[in-house]
Picture: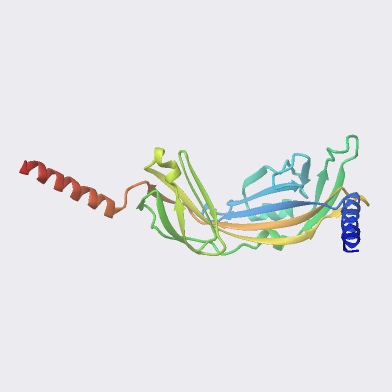
Length: 254
């Protein structure tokens, strides 16, 4: 009796899954990333659009058209050096998602639409700051930093580090992987990001292959600071110096 109930339950779950797939309930996501670099002045804004369909990587079968006609192809296209007025004029209004069905050759492109308001694109969190180490500091390959943001990028020739954190605070950066190119001067940028859901896009077709959710991420970037990374800590240098002195004294005794 129990086995019959289990079999019936399994059949119901399987049938529901098939029905859901038949209705085109695959989930995709469109992310609009708007950034503000206040230290660059009035033209310090940027926008990027990412499209995902059935995975966590940009899908080449998607293109997203902005209200001004700009097409973000393959979810890997960004525009920088914009003013806030340009952001509003070009990207407030109705957007269109063009979804190519690669698993159904010959099928027409499916279209979805969603709207973005001015407030969505012009509301930014507070500009963050790195409070330690100070600009110009010399730090070891593994060091702690404190920031009022929730993200950081550290870059230099052959060096790339990025971290995101649940809240501002003190965290550790480990650049020991790049020890072969250290020490060197790197540039660190703190950021503060806020993510907001704009709901789901509206499909033009009655049975869409994919349902898209819309997410908007607003990011404020701090002015970059420079550090020299890969310099031994003072205590290490002191111990090394004392060892050399002791070794020299030992040689003199001989």
